[in-house]
Length: 311
Image 1 (cartoon, rainbow, N blue to C red):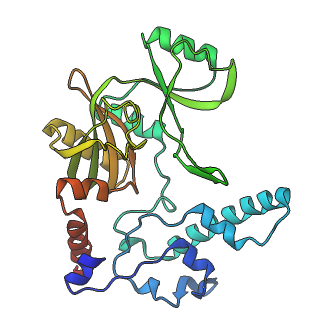
Image 2: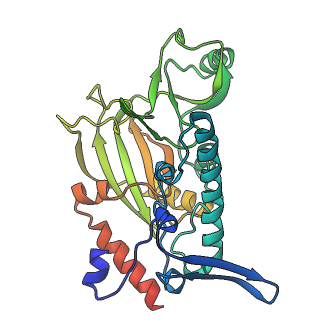
Image 3: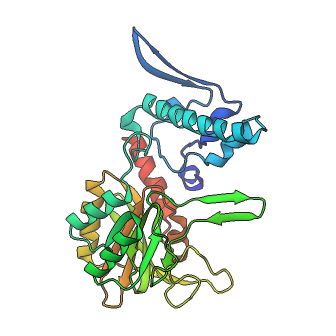
């Protein structure tokens, strides 16, 4: 936003939670008119719309005046469902041609299994993956694929769960080699072959360009499985990185197939130098790549949005 103002243009930020505050708005649909949106902020008059992170679901709970625990949980579930419907209706009412990138509320966001399948189809290497609810399938999967170690990660998205004792974050985690800690049956979960990495790469992809950063997380026990389990006392070294041309070409094909203009991509480089695709987050962080690598991505994004507004 600072760069947009620097270039002499105006912009406005709207958060999902703003819809529950003082900002009046309405979405109309009648027999004689198509869907129309009216807001106090003038959101419907924007020339270009850029979707990032719309709302934190925990923010909704502050607007639910219910104290009884069981009822409280049911009401929270209802309100979250209604807010999701509200968001989809709001975005549907906006001119689809104005979006810089299509929000997940309008298009079906590609789940990890689809991402991995598309990545494989365009020639990217992927970790061997299984979603199952029982130990027997895991054991057969490991034997058939000659896998020594597994990791487990969320099937959809990671999350943070707050309590009076602190915040619990879902990280990618190792599974015991013998599967001794795994019960015979469990909630369906996503497991992958544990790749022995040399380092990992975070790539911010935008408008056909890859902006990559190497993260030297392998030799730190705290970050060796998931660099997001940050070591704040001794942070990982992060440096600018250039992906091989053929990998970049495959990533462009991947993003085109997934109908994504932008996204943050996670890649592992193994001991043999192979680049292994893990996943893409359409609203992933990019400042954590921009700042250490001096990419000035915020400036590039601002210029791109301004050019689209001027067309």
